[in-house]
Image (cartoon, rainbow, N blue to C red; front, side, top):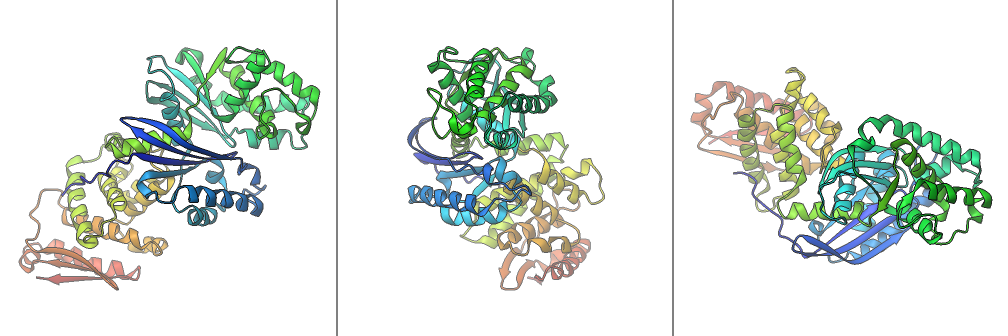
Length: 499
């Protein structure tokens, strides 16, 4: 039985962007293939400013963030998980105590939080930007300066072609280069040169010949556009000359606390200096003459990606297909194992099938052998390493970790799986894939037992097989008996019963 379940489409979707500067909630109505905002909430949490020198979120920042998420959670009461997607960005990628914070944050919010990789963030930013721009054929370079990172994307129509994420953020750069709040020429020079040094690493891919129009998104770009236009330093677009005029004004004012510029919102003033220095570096290093600004950004991209999943246009399916081609997976073997693993999982779950885990099992089954391109010995470890660490568009880091764990457990010594003992939902997927791989060890469409059942009990699992099949397949019978010992290594009981 193949995976055919699709989530029924919803008319209202919501997303939360846990940025390093601001937390944003957007609720949108779905009309055909378009989204129209119904409600938007923003709170300037400055999560990135709460990172200590040893990369821990301090207590005050955590409390501020948790209080915000409790308010967002109230707004989302009545929503079901399929309607909501919550993404965390750079600060949650780097904070060492992020797992503990996320666990508490999910309790306050009532929905799971996905921490996404930098390039996945870039892909989603482009998707959001593209939906707010005319659908023309030119190649766009989209730049999104966030609180802790800056994403660079070259794309056309709705597809991101080149993505990159660099550790440049308006919050982190303001703290690093303007720590005492002083706005001096030397501080701006140091910040701009540091940003240029980072951008130089990707310059060869983002040179002007590779794109026709530059697009800015999110708070820094919108603030710069508004300030430059209101003060007649540029006309509607961001320009280098206009930013240089703004920089001179800030230097004359001398201090972040003293900044007063027409058109500058109060919540943006504390991080303007870092954002301005980064944007000047972008213009100088990538030879940008002018940059238009769009309202679409990460949260819009997340919503369109969520809508795509509900319309059976899931980017994760495309990524799995790409990885199968890239790593030369044996498609027929993967599909044999996938179909049986899904069947076994449904036996275990009964009527209470966890559709999300079923999807992850299916993806894991299709990719369980990709490590063979590295080496046959311990290939399951190579497969798991790829799934854990590769850039996988559409997948969160948590989803990748789940795929990696299922694949890691599909063969070999089960002792390595002891670290996952506290994740009971994972074990049904692991046993389903592990048993399916054993049945198709010969890599042919071998006849399965007429009597086949996999069930769960308090101490583990029971695999029931036809006695005559076991007699006719002594190698498989031996393999299943060896499995009994492997499951004991992680404290489970696997019973092999003849029918």
